[in-house]
Image (cartoon, rainbow, N blue to C red; front, side, top):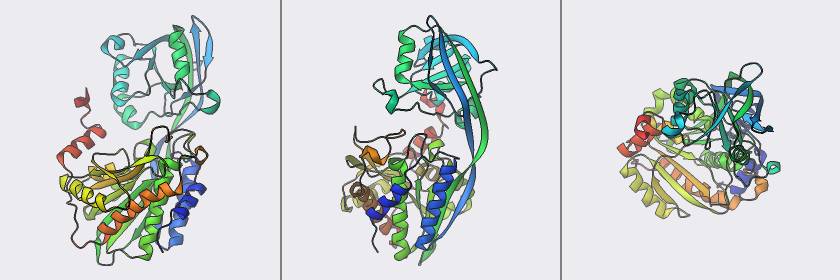
Length: 424
């Protein structure tokens, strides 16, 4: 039996619902993927791992001077709670946190452009901000058609720089607050942090000739709040299922491991947990193939290579022979390929990025009703992954050296905040 984009798209439709890290829906999706894997006849199981979770019971923001108005907000998951009765303070718009801004933020409720990145969070904490406000979306968003993004203070922030009170609001509301010259405001956050559970779905097909040589396949199946995550990344997950089905019927010479990762959207937590738990076997892994985002009708095909120049050259030659044209890039990609490359396993990511205006990610528009995905476009990435997989699973002399080049290593170290001082 050959791979089927139609069959893959039917599974994508079935799993097109919100699947946030640590939620019952994420677990439900994992169990469905496990069921599908077992129905193919492969050895499959679920591996659980702990995740930091947060629940915001309530959040409020009221401008109190020189005018009074309440604005809808969401509290950051894992935010600190305000004191009983809330927090009253002066408001300051710090824009991009230049030194001239930072000297004015102490003990104030501080609005920044977008969500605070790690180095911005560090600056705000060191400058003594009383609370952090961010905004998301567009000035043109219609409240009836958009949601206020639910953000999270990840451990990469709080473990290094301490907790904070943080809220998020709509872009248009943030602009109104600044335009009307807000001076003081009242905020409330009632937040709870706890340890939750996420899941990786794991399956293996043992090689016929070289069982101790392993090719690892990965895709994440979780989504963010308000999103059904069909583009990001149930599309990659169903492609992986089709690849596994092919090799279940055409036994590979090398061992193939298939992992559907949970909690990728919270900082690659699933793949980080898996590589940590399986560290002893990673020396047997020759390559990690990741699939993250596919199926937009209008888009471009990208082949990221996280290895060295020889691996990139091989990918370029292979790309010339693939069923559909694809651009090769020697670069990291923010997905589950990174933890493997970080541990010395060459990794690649194949994807199809939606063209501008024809891609919706990390919001409610990432759904099938938006009409920007189709099975024919999904088949493009499916066929590209299959072409690569058949080559590396069966070729006698493996063509990719087990080397991570210095440029990629440097990018990985920066991505994982090991060289954050160099970003200043």
